[in-house]
Length: 348
View 1: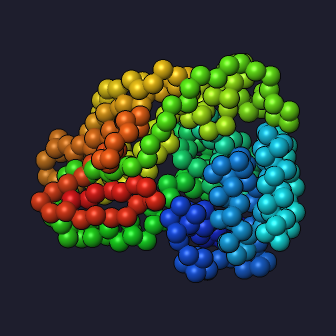
View 2 (view 1 turned 60 degrees about the vertical axis):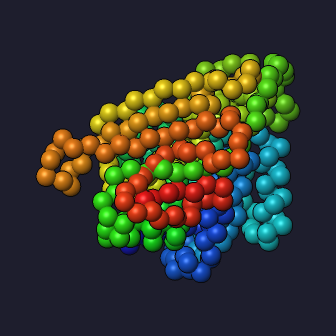
């Protein structure tokens, strides 16, 4: 058992690099070490339209891994991805619409979750209960309560669960954090991340019949079942409270993670935020302007009540030639570290 768990742990570490490589440019050679042929890990990918398609290509590059199954509630997407796998000259995987049926498959060792946010924690918990290891995209849960239940499930069922904060697999970021930890730029007390992305309005979408091939009841899952509209479905679910977390749970989660990492802090003791949906008259429910401050106890210093703060600003609706700050970190000198394609984290 210990050998099997060790192999699985190595697999998930390298799988994280494989999946992250799509966004971060990590080469296959950087994760060439993997479990032996007799320890091949059979993985199922759940949710394959957007980020899940990156998972397919990422797992396909990890030696010792077999994409054994795909799962998606939209059979149109599912069939398209099966065709993509055939073009990659990979063995044809099983296909499922209902993740509960997939989890009954004893041949599946691990699942990779790239569904909408509201499914992340529940699907991961079910996987742990079924004896599967888990790779779950960010955010690992739709809310804090669900996240705590996932941690409990991982411990209770003795599973391996990796969270998809891909920036931590970026060699450039690893080097930058190493320099920060070594005190290269002095005492780090604040972090600032810049995002150049532009989010246009999603407009208004009218209620309509559920498209053919879509199991909308399964797609809704633990969220309240509401009439189908295009703005409650593919991608735009990010901006609906029942299913998404707005830009904070979409893009800013990466920048906030890097900032916390650079500050060397754990969880905040206090958070304050102010914002709202100020840009556009459309169906979006989540804020497109948001300022948040996170306060941390600095246990490394002699003064136990000293705090460090991180400010996150996510005005994705404001198009400008200047970068959009999402989170912050600075001291007496400045260093710039590469993050993802259209984002930068300033550590200084």
